[in-house]
Length: 123
Ligand SMILES: [Zn+2]
Image (cartoon, rainbow, N blue to C red; front, side):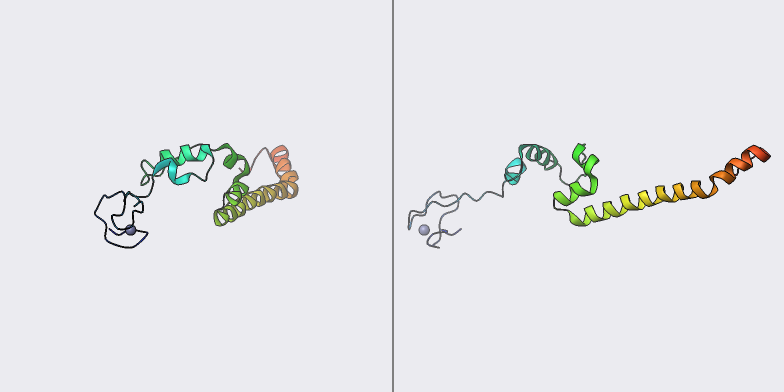
């Protein structure tokens, strides 16, 4: 390894450069667990630290804000594509609800008529 200060060769595991005396950072892998997310609030550091223990396996953690705010939560958390997709699905579902309302408005009377007049329902 090499001294980050003077660039000369330094023995592996040395804490200080023998040439210039600069402190040599220990050659450890990047911090794992909660430290990696030091910029995040305590809550997410805890959650992500737990996720980090088995990052290959998809894990869940119930999230009320995501449940309530859905697409906006994704947008706020910096996942605009997922947020937009979510929003499309929400809008699409609301559209389906509107479709049902229109159907009821158009055919509700007829459905009621069939039931009362002929004692039958289409479904
Ligand atoms: Zn040095």
